[in-house]
Length: 442
Image 1: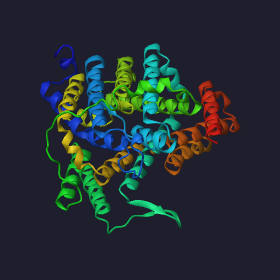
Image 2 (image 1 turned 90 degrees about the vertical axis):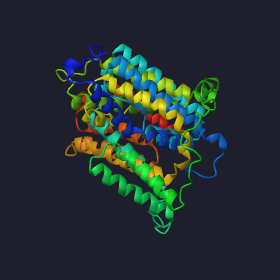
Image 3 (image 1 turned 135 degrees about the vertical axis):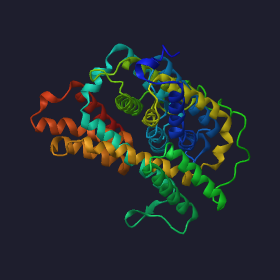
Image 4 (image 1 turned 180 degrees about the vertical axis):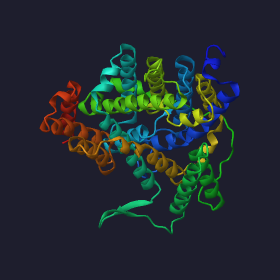
């Protein structure tokens, strides 16, 4: 095993890899609670049950998708990178595709599956490099920052920190409400933990918030800590039912699939490069075994869709494990095994409320908007599409709309600026797709 994972070459050992894998797991374990709550639209009242995914089934799908993705990444690509259903993409799935567009969650899972299959083809064919180069870096950064603002807004809204105000559209919540105060307390605790550099600060912050909620009677106490694994059948295989419905094949679904693909594609590439850089695994500014790493990600997305969860992607929280000493895929294997063990702790889902998940959503949003600093705001032709992409996501409550607006304006501003040669043909194709998207929405 030492030889396979290149312990000697990378200067590591079992202790460092196990500790790194555990640290990564603690840093991203919050997804086990947040993802089921998000995909079930747990914070949205008065919805038909047909629009809600079963929380227990999504919990199992989340844990299994994370385990499958992390194990493949560790064993095949041999990188200390863990995977799980992605934040931002799960919000897009739930709040934009299902809640706003009115697309059945079964169809949304079908879209995730198709995006994953396309990702597999791109990973195997070598086309991925061409697509990565076709999208300007500034728009990639803008999409990441926009998603950060979007999920921050979702978290604040879910916890009633931000509420509807007929006079000015939005307003501050009622500070006499115990749940609002609990969410604010959770944000404060999580900020303190993250500022102090505590490993797993987001997860620990959720635990402390939940305990505080139980002490003050704002959160119900769980009946047990360990229990049987929930039934995954309510979501397992539901993605396949979409292909038998003619309404699935529409321009609207094409945009949804492209959005799933686009965000996962570039989020994964950025995460892999970031983690590899921190771990000192880059060679001549290139990522060895990049194809295998992307294949692990795309395969996990397809598996997750079959099981019943939104897009599975590489987690930037893996850098916490690298900071703890992880350098090889063994760390990812350890994280994957821990996700399997977590399947037996489903009773703890009962303590997950909007106030408990809000801090995680908001802090992850803070981490994602860091990409704003990488955009060259001095170039107006770049600043406009980037700014509109970022702004439109929270204001329209749609990640897809933000991407569409930015990708429509980019060719326009570049052509007017006289930089036609800098526009890749793929950008013109996306321009047409997104124009049709708006036409169909009207």
